[in-house]
Amino acid sequence: MALKRMAVEFGLGTDLRGEDYTKAAVRALRDALWHNSLNIADALGFPREAMIVEVMIGVAKPDQVNKDEVAAVLPYGSARVKVEEGGLDVAKADGSGRTVMANAAAIVYFDIAEGASS
Image (cartoon, rainbow, N blue to C red; front, side, top):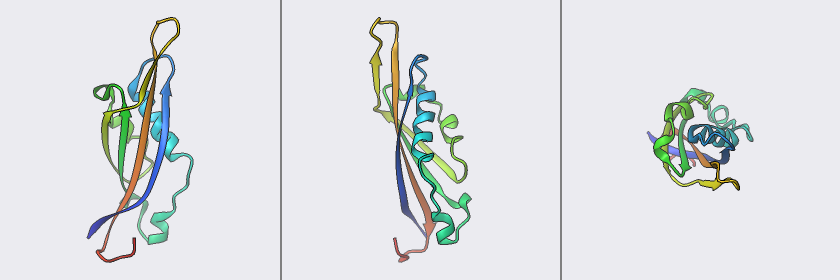
């Protein structure tokens, strides 16, 4: 058996006032997932729970993201969450804080037999 990449979705999330990197990351993942309806599992005859979803999050302060909260966004399948430096922080005009932006990529894999069509 081997992992085969089946789909990639991208999203953007923000926290306008609270400077909460987890909130921005969760919103970015929701943005990536909620704009589509993947029926790959059904097409291949797999249960949806067999999906392996690699979640990549980019934010300015990766250590401030709660990976468990990000993983909880997935409606099914198993999550592998990786957070790295990226995204964007935008200072407010009055200097009172910043808006936090996060980018997300959700990559869907299935463990399927070697030699199967990809």
